[in-house]
Length: 337
Image (cartoon, rainbow, N blue to C red; front, side, top):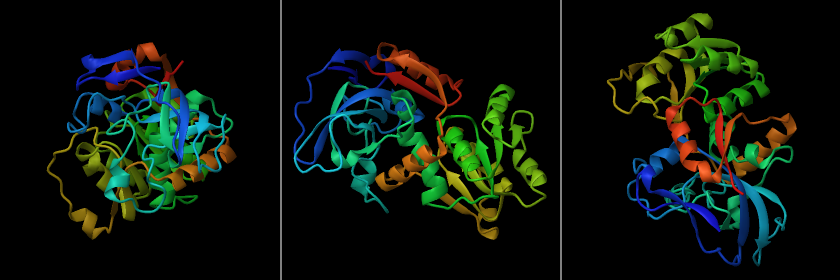
């Protein structure tokens, strides 16, 4: 089978090779034929050895994928040959709070990922994909989609009429925007690009803030909310933006801490978190139960993920470079022939 393999850390050590077919699934397992994968910033960090230098190599990278069931092993119920599925990022995290093994046993490091034609996975590691989506669209769901869903509907409960600040226009951010509008929340979208802000407006964003022009955007959010602040902040910048998020969030509000794109070290006054009883909720994707609920909602809402660009498997290095440049709006997908 065709697969992308990382022989050692560094993008220059990625290559498209032939690997042995994985064979037949055992009891409780399924054989999956991947049709598409999508990229997350995590994938770039893994390849560069910056996410976890202890991950085993060689490795097949990439955490997100969609495809179809080729064969099912013994004792597998509710799944049949031909079913269109998503692979789950954490195949053994079924529901509730994960233990360390469930949370750290994930595709695209330390387990082989989705940039390959075939894989044997535990039956718990797949879910039916939304029926109205293509493989390319569905491939965006396992990490970016589920992270936004877990933030709003698992660890918290976003309600109609609440206010949400969303940073940027990457995968998680745009899913958060679409989910927020689906339940009737008001969305404040930040970006350094007026063009991306306008595209965000077409997805339903109510207020647009260019943080290059308005660096104190936390104060701007307070102004726009009548001095109250926002109920929820989707925080993807980390230490580099957390100061503004703390200024933007209302009393008893929630900061959903998802990424650290803007850095990890900064002097920060944490007193407002205490005095305003602000909840800071770290989010690491989510569990299978949440994935099932999300896909059901996506079907009901007829929601379409935002796909920026689709690459062929032979162009995977170009796709990774495009991801690194950060010019995309939504998700970057790799089609698997």
